[in-house]
Image (cartoon, rainbow, N blue to C red; front, side, top):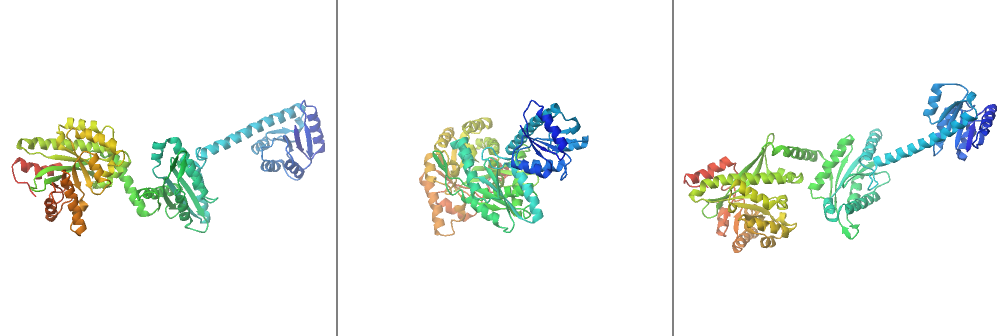
Length: 577
């Protein structure tokens, strides 16, 4: 075992060497009589242990101990030697990295050999513990899949960067990046392929960053980049464009080449927020806006954007309790015969009576309900409410020979629900509404995915006697193909065509063509958004079957609708126009 003995007292050195030679172990001892020589020897070669005198002519042992630990890569086994007993000094030596503290007067072969052996063991244990701690630190701060910094590690980096930015007035920005439609990759190609994609994305993103930039994977398909710059305020914008550009080329995933986009949100320190948590929230707000604006683009945080997203979050949190608190209401808009203007049906339209914000329009909350998975519950509630109310009115009017249909919108999630047929049957049975009185409205955009599977389900429902209406006809995709494939018996002409029919000759001819198409195809046509007598007359003259719009009635709650339409029929009075 190679030992370095650093002691200025020659008598003490001789006594120590003599004691070591009496040991059963073999020691090769190199001597140094001052701190300077001892440190140089420790630099030149490796020693299994160092015996260090506390008092040296050119430095005290504590100073030498600190330097030894700083200059050697692996922890050096050090046993401190002193002629004076001092518990505080001994404790201090151990705290600074010594493995043992011995009094020179007590040194003999047995004590010295045991001390060196135990010191070696403690040193090995300390080194193993330090390596283990370092590995745990790496695991705690890095993502196991991509090897990037993880959320915890990024938060540490961000807090340090913000503290430095405060001192040095540096520019700092957070760039949050989320892959577009990553879930579809997992669903179609499998999670293992999704993991391969994440690794490739991480590699590409890392390649376009500078050495000083920090990139992390926050979890799932979300990445974040920390950008700092001393001089150029707008450099984060350049970085964000570089990050987006890496998605222009396809990713090779085994047998599949995949093209995927990303949505990026950027927030600047001090302009958006002055602490780490708020800065991340602002970047998230900007990234959400990028998703909403069409995806695969970059958005920068602003106060107006913050206000909009906060309201959206308010709507989201309120939505989760709206059904339980019975805040939703169903309103009904009349549908009248185009020639007689007599009631032939009504459309059920949901409204939200928010306890604070008042009436909230469907286009403000239904897209959010779809995103957070509440659409099925809302749709089921509307369907049951509408059918229940329609059956009440129908049972009152049937003895008079009056019939009508109730139109209820089907959402994309409902159409894709494998239990749709059973739900319709259950609702009709529970409410007692005849199947022929129910009309289900679907939009063309809801039919794009798995059209043939959807067609099978809709055909089964149509077999019950329920009829289907194609809503917003003329504004979606592949209208003719859908009319052929699906059991469509009603075409609802979108209100935009009705509103602009007299703007120029093309608009006039377009509306006429849509109405003539429905007539030629022998399906019921419904003109939506009719607000003037001129619009009503134009549509009627071109074989339109049913009219719907403010000219006849706005959507009304059940009590108001009953007062305007049902009661006059019961008393055999003329329907108001």
